Image (cartoon, rainbow, N blue to C red; front, side, top):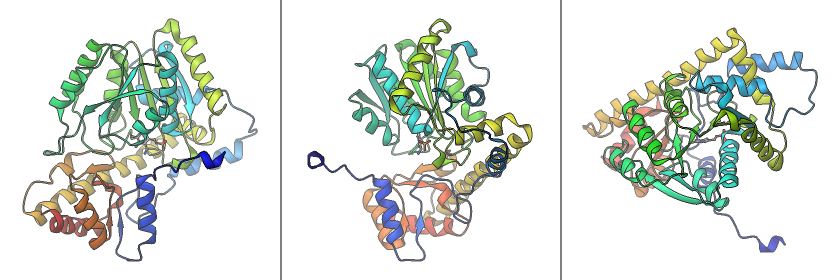
Length: 393
Ligand code: PMP
């Protein structure tokens, strides 16, 4: 049987990690992998997470199964953090999932279960796992323009032209904030236009919210998601706690389905069914920590303060990289780095330039010239700026 298997294409980011690991140069800089790192290059366990883990160890009395949808307190607390009071809770159904990836996978499976011929629209570019899962599930897919290679901002005209072709019942996957891989985001007025257009077209939004708190703030980063949630009869939201709680390996996410209150029971039943088919009960450890933090005023305040430090650290790095690039290239061509948001920026370099940065300067970034801003520190910002100026100046 196994001889029938074909080799799978290698994941480009995992390949890059291996190349970085094997590079003997001590000056090497890793801007590839998408995890937050502090100034010393570490991805620390957040203080509130450690405190919650200690409390959990002391107070947990059983590890028996949770519910199929996860613990109701987790779903309620995280839904409230994402949605505020944008939607009455009798319209919300939800399941805990293994990370944001699990939430996206379950969302797509739900869509396929309900409307197998629906087309799922994704931004070009997007997180590579989006098209990969859609293709794996055998679903129809279409792309909308997103990135303007000249300005490194959003190609809003192209985006609106493409989304005008969406058909009723099609699903449109939108990054709620901090677009991955570009770092370029819609402003409030542009979100309003997208929402009006998609509502006219009869589209169903699927919002991927993986970086709440990494852009403009915890509430600000949920603003578009909340507007969408309130504006459409049916919405899916796939959210991840990997980044904002720093619990990547605990696999903590949620899929929220918003529909008519009368259909909530059937929607919830289908979400539970999908968890049952795929893995039965969702992981609980990370979800429990998130619940403990969100329900305890002191832990929540400490978590929010640390998340804000993380966010501001990335903003400072963005500004200093933009400043250094101004000096190094004697131009404002790279000013966009300061207005991008989230962990990533697509620099708009050619693949050959990306290769030269790796080979000659030991600077590692993804082939499409996406850099992880958090991979930088005060020492490496000028080194990167000088190297970019040399290969692309
Ligand atoms: N969506 C996007 C856009 C992401 O960048 C990520 C993480 N890289 C995810 C979803 C899923 O994250 P996880 O499964 O690790 O929670």
